[in-house]
Image (cartoon, one colour):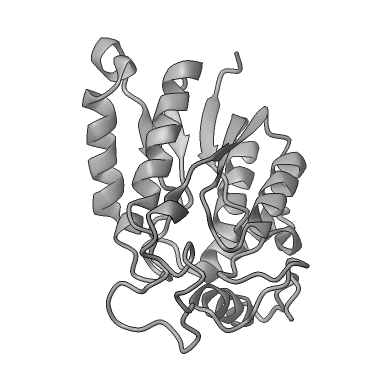
Length: 225
């Protein structure tokens, strides 16, 4: 096994692509983990595959789970409209209940199977939509869980949860990725991609992304309809 091995939650978005580039730079063998969880923007999984291939990941698992069966989010329930009027106060309808908790639980299970002690996730708490599971307090709490709920934690060294983009603004993340050669044209952030993989340009995720590229004086290379 390589000297440095990591599990990465890979969504197909620009944040996780940037984390993949950081790991590649630092010499990690990356085991990527993506989820078909019932999201309306399933085209993102095609881009997660492309990013994984581009980054030369050691393995890439795409697991099917049914968060859509629970409902409660505009990202999993087509009857709920995705907001297009900007980021407002409070937790928006695009929040998927407990999504990152579920994703990290799977990552923790894979860490046990592969005997890997470093788990990376691309959450950030600066330019984001107010999701509670993107905050530093959540990452810290999950780290405590990993220490007491796993064989690795009880018998040896507990898996560590890393969120290297946690305190970066979206423009800083993009700037970091560009310096590492990330092709952001392969990434998608939109909550309502069309069948051709084109972004809407109006949802919160698109607004944050477009604003960040504009801040850097650049155009977003991803296609918009």
